Amino acid sequence: MDTDVMWGHIDAERSGVADMLSGLTPQQWSTPSLCTGWTVRDVAVHLTQAHTGFGRLLKMAIRSGFRFNTMIRRAAVEEDMTQDQVVAALRGMVGSRRKAPGAFPLLDVIIHGQDIAVPLGIERSMPVDAAIDSAQQLWGMRFPLNPSRQLRGLSIRATDAEFTVGEGPEVTGPIRDIVLVLSGRQAGLAGLSGATGRIRLGA
Image 1: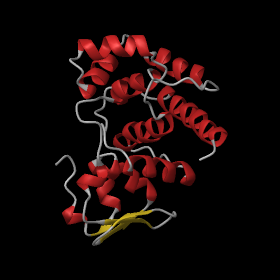
Image 2 (image 1 turned 90 degrees about the horizontal axis):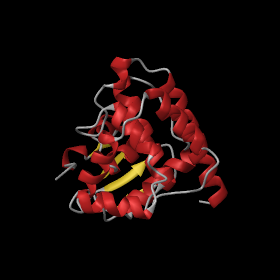
Image 3 (image 1 turned 180 degrees about the vertical axis):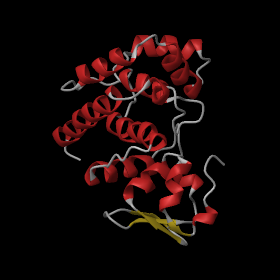
């Protein structure tokens, strides 16, 4: 994907997530997200940390024993931000091309927007080209996720986009649900058809 197009999507997604967050009630703010053990609030705060510099990232990694998931969850949970501050921080990131070392900002905001929206029953679409780019990044990923290993022996095909990966019995569905499944979200399985019984997320 062209760099300018990518950052345009990132800006639009951050603005959209900020708008969504601004209207949430305290109960919705504390709702469990699609990320196990993370609330909507935790995921929202995590999105504001996409500009974390190398120095702070290294300190966080050392403090967490270089355990990636522990590090990012602790950083989000321990950050003292109000709902209004989170919304303002996300809006303040629009137009910036800063990113944390090793981060995939488009992938992050695409998936985490769904982590927030789905459990709240909010319909949030994915731009098709951004969803395809995210799915391709996920399929090529080896850490912290490795979907090509988890879904080995299956062919994954989007029914509404040009995206096909893998070999074997076919699993089909909307690109949005494929992105969710490739990122380990069980919620995406409901939208898929075919050999879904062979999918073992988290295995």
